[in-house]
Image (cartoon, rainbow, N blue to C red):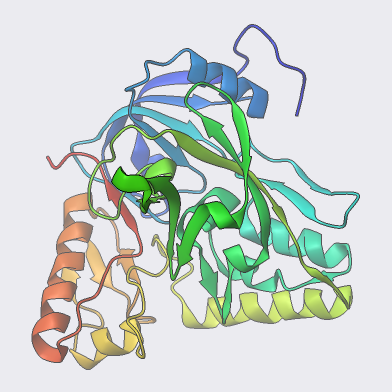
Length: 324
């Protein structure tokens, strides 16, 4: 991290079209957007904001839908800002929140570390991987977390360990003391900008980095595994069409894609949104889709699957902002 300064070095924009910053290429506008120069600059910027300013952290925008009515508050961009990636003296990797998963996977392989290959299969940055305990092909992010680095609304950097969180399938909750001293979980996705279906209350902490541990091994084998994984993604997912990755969490003992396909919904359209014909757990923007089209199709799929199979599908994607 660079030395603290007393003036902002990033770029502040107003009334920004969020469709340019999300992989679905749909949605409304945000009041303000800040592209920090680095972590020190982001910390300084937070100190200039009112404590009740709504904040949303965005990396590659690959798991995000901003409703057509837009977004109040400020978006903080991590991609291009929080980009540090290094090997520490103890062998762990220090990775900032704006580092893409594929870059992390390749970096680990280059340094003879194995186990990070799955990160290449997730189209997002570390901040998002931490917030939702992202995973694929049998691996999950928090299995490798030694400790995390969070930034408070006051611009203070704090380190936490996995013991501070309740970690589950696609969920991470900070343990906080409730009444009577009992611990309660607070969804860490709120600290990354949203719950799955509503605009968040002001958050107190933001994931900005982590120290990750992977085993030493055959770096060349790891690089080949990454190559194979990426080829599998291209073959099985609609990579060339705007989408946000997997839309729904897999229910226990089954797969969302199988359930959706069993209901005859593969290829189903609503406006410019379509259930992918290549992978039923993806919704693609075929051209000109609005956020309302996409959200409406998500709700239609949920209703059909629930009615025909009894399974309630829960979105993995974040849906935030105001309806138009």
